[in-house]
Image (tube, rainbow, N blue to C red):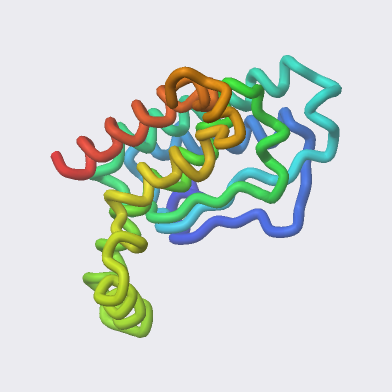
Length: 190
């Protein structure tokens, strides 16, 4: 298909019903699994035209489609060149609470590939990244950023004093997020 031959696909400043957004994610998953995708950057999810609160079935279908997309990304990591995937602002409201980690996971799935891409292609991005790594290696280390996201996004810091353990203060989906990240790291290294 024409869509699979593009290097960058973005739906910018557009919106569609949740069912259409779900269809785009499903189509992206099919193209990834077909091995025909040539994407390096993808933004195929439009903003929703309706409130997700109005239709729980669509929210469930959408989050299941995104979860399957994440699986396809991990399965095809070694054979595709995708280094960036963007969701539209406000997309978190389109996920049930137990699936919000998927948005965070997708942002970290590409960290190692993105850094490797920058370091292997000469240019200002490479020079900038090398300079940042020399100044503060841990802040720009792709292996540390996914772990740091657990503390920044999935730890409910205000609950730490009321809990007996750190695990009790974690968001309910932290273990699912961590599983995706560990599987992704294994796929990148393998």
